[in-house]
Image (cartoon, rainbow, N blue to C red; front, top):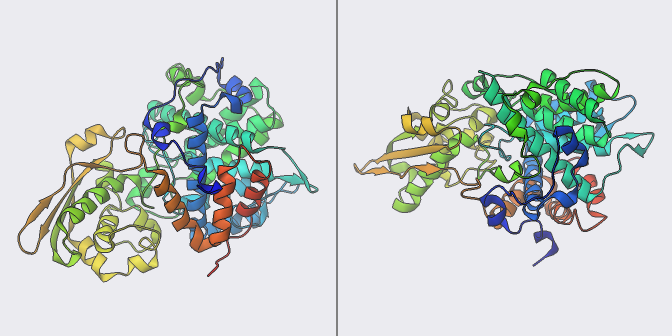
Amino acid sequence: MSRCCVILNKTESAMAEPDRGSTAAFADVPTFVRGLAFADLPEPVAVSARRSLLDLIGVAAAGSRTRAAAIASTYAATQLCGSERSARILFDGRRSGMAGAAFAGAMTIDAIDGHDGHALTKGHAGVALLPALLALIDSERAGEAAYRVDGPEFITCFVLGYEIATRAGIALHATVADYHCSGAWNAQGCAAIASRLLAFDDMRTRHAFGVAEYFGPRGQILRACDSPTMVKDGSCWGAHAGISAALLAAEGFTGVPAVTVEDDAVIELWADLGSRWRILEQYFKSYPVCRWAQPAIEAALELKRAHAFSAAEIASIVIESFSEAVALGSRCAMPRTTEEAQYSLAFPVAAALVCGRIGVDEVSARGLTDPRVRRLVAMIRAEESAEFSRRFPAERWARVRIELADGRMLVSEPAQARGGPENPLGDDELRAKYRELAAPVIGVARAERIEHAVGALTVEQSALPTLLEDLLQPAVQRH
């Protein structure tokens, strides 16, 4: 086996159940932020962190081609500059202030909806955490790095961010009526990483959390699902708010308490830090579209595999799913932009039936103009299943009925999206996804170098510097 394959091993054990075997004990959240060590991480947790890291990098490479990423990166490089410290922007290379670099990097990942997430948060942590971590450790003043971090500490900070952000997301959903975008709570994870690297005491950490919670974007994500645009999941502002909160707290800016951390109603969510690892509960996407559409894609493709019909034979399609999935893109039948394609239910199902797959090409300009896909989109009807809605968000289900021109009616079994802890993507699948997303943008050699560096982060001193240089240079098209 080549060295670049060490990143993804023991997948089944890592994703099956939350690990509860750690002996680490943390009295409270600030103690966890300050005291978590790489030695505290069970092996499946470190494996899962490397899986998420590689997956996010692949999505970022694909996202760097989008107009949304280009706009955000230019905005950060020209308007969010740092006069004292600056950091390079993910797959762009230009410098911005730390908060600006985190902002642009999160938008680059969010621009292609293929990154990992968590069912109970109904959103995404890593999309903000990775750019925030990169911005912090790449930041410099007069050529001197701000924070000296090695590979094990990089992974520890990354895991720390997932544990904090995921719990903050669950807590936010439990304490407010509106369903807010991921930036509303992944800001907390970014603030946690920054608090650790800035060596905050308990009170400054609490203030950073409070500021991040208060300033984090409370975007109403269902509006973006109904009428998709570039605002996506608000993670760019979550990353910005998290870094800004820590920098403000460092100067004495106050913000306690963070309700999602300290309120009596959610305190039990934080009691298992260091014993239950929420990073093991993340899902990985098979397709670069909203997770809510993926059960229907799986159901449609299973029918196609089982009955071997062509898209031209289809006379009608009915999708049954939970209410949030049914509402995806409901105001625009045929997508006109990649954002509308990624937040649609009908379009990815139609494209999967035509193309046999859903990738970046299918949700980009090429796929949006395919007349075969357009024909199927026009005949799809979506219906809510009360049972599937009852099971959401812990479970996401769909069933597809396809009528063929010869009169046959094909009905799928209820399907879930693949990639969760209960039905994980295999190591080979995740590596193939990464390569498919990254290699066409940054070239095969650079993609392989990144893959190796991610796998070697905790065993080779040179892995992290190599990884940083490859991630923080412009994404160059190579043929």
